[in-house]
Image (tube, rainbow, N blue to C red; front, side):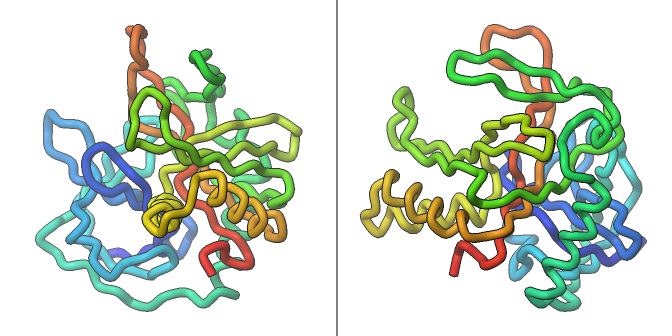
Length: 251
């Protein structure tokens, strides 16, 4: 089945790239590689050449593969070459995100996911997660003021050469979150500044200054089931899979 979707998310995934989009009825769709007996996988980077967020793309889907909370998964036909229709204008992008926000409301609480949000108490912070097998959706959109968020970018003390990309923010109910960012464009922006010799503290300050003057739409997604070290149960941790600011922080 051929179907057009507006791409909203390009995020890091252990195997391939995780993309997400919406059809004309605002139904969420995540194209994945799905082989019988295996977990869903992201798409190869070369398969997504020339595709970027807010591109309208036609894919060929095989069938839905809903496994809560990832109810939006659709197996994709990799033999079909994606067809780029067009890219949304900046005005269209903001209007589209506003519509998604209306669907998601302004919180990332139970009413959005269709299940409870739990908290894993790690060494450095508490991290929200959803239990595998629960929930009616795996990704939502919220809108925040840039002045209400804190950008964190630093080298991991225990893993030199590897970096953290995080944003701390609060939702409409004043609930605080400190989430890792898997948005590839955001991570690439930080990486490019580092290759230019900029320190992490400079990157944090620059992004903080830009975002403080912006309206920000955050895409919050549930990761694939994962067991933290020392734990015997799996959890679908929440991540920031998309960061869109108006004005655009990348310009």
